[in-house]
Image (cartoon, rainbow, N blue to C red; front, side, top):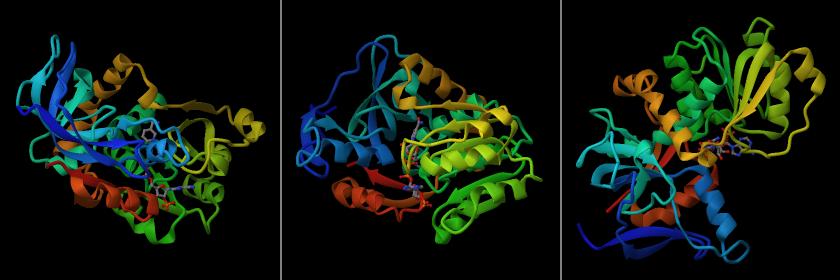
Amino acid sequence: MTEMMTALFGGAGPDWETRQVPVPKPGPGQVLVRARAVSLNNADVQMLAAADPASGSRQEYLAGFEFAGEIAALGEGAGGVRLGERVMGTTQGAFAQYVLADHRHVIAVPAGIADEDASALPTGLLTEHGALTLGDFQPGQSVLITGATSSIGLIGIQIAKSLGAGTVIATTRTESKKDLLTDAGADCVIATASQDLTGLVLDATDGQGADLVLDHVGGQTFADCLPATRVDGRIVNIGRLDQAESTINLDALSYRHLRIAGVSFGFSRPDELGHVIAALAHQVLPAVADGRIRPVIDSVLPFGQAKEAANRMRSGRAHGKIILTVP
Ligand SMILES: NC(=O)c1ccc[n+]([C@@H]2O[C@H](COP(=O)([O-])OP(=O)(O)OC[C@H]3O[C@@H](n4cnc5c(N)ncnc54)[C@H](OP(=O)(O)O)[C@@H]3O)[C@@H](O)[C@H]2O)c1
């Protein structure tokens, strides 16, 4: 193994900067992964903006969250994987040739899944399955997914269908992205810029509302979900693509006996996140292995084009995941 590696750092300018840094050594319970592909999340460009020296914190950090590659070294007590095994996972500091991760936060890559595809899966799988679980999802239930063209929302549609959801209703603001949602398996698609979210969800659910909502948008969209949720239904907030503040009607909440929860797995304790990831093994990974769940890939770029990748994500025009191949 080499001594030095190439890695992308935020906080040095408006975009990631390439640095040569020492290859880290895995500590207790950690694995070192030789990354082959990494993928972008919305949080990556948010963090870049927050650390931009022109306006933000100037705090430099090793960037990235999602990766796929093979196990290059095991720290003391790290189990469940072996040297050379292909894994995908999530950790802070993934945009590097060698990635340190908690051994509980890597997942064996099912056979036949390429590194680029594998790198696009972990966040979507764990977040959407974790939210469905928190929302007590049961087969046959209807699920409303807002901001469903987001990379993780597209995975959420596929997980819900593979677990036996009844009607899956998906929203986008953008008329031209409706096919993306239908192709991912949504039964009903709502373009919120021109269509009424609440009314159309009620139409699609015999006037009852969805059993469970996975909300990636927040703001007014979150408020509109309450009267679109059936009596005794659940709403799980996952993202705030629009905004974190939302003014809700408490009558809609109370008269419908709704339960509202939030998740942010990036802020979970390591063992809690380990449990969420472990739960994928039986219910979700078989569907990845047999092709019922596939990442939607917008583009695959070389590591050296990280700036173009960030700009593509900022543009809002991406259809699915943006991947960087690691040299
Ligand atoms: N809870 C967790 O643990 C967790 C984990 C991962 C991500 N997240 C959060 O989940 C969200 C999605 O993440 P991602 O990386 O999958 O996102 P992403 O792929 O970057 O999402 C892009 C999509 O967001 C939609 N969008 C952008 N601005 C919007 C706005 N103002 N209102 C409504 N929709 C908007 C656009 O869809 P249209 O053009 O089709 O409307 C766009 O296609 C983010 O808020 C992220 O922070 C949460």
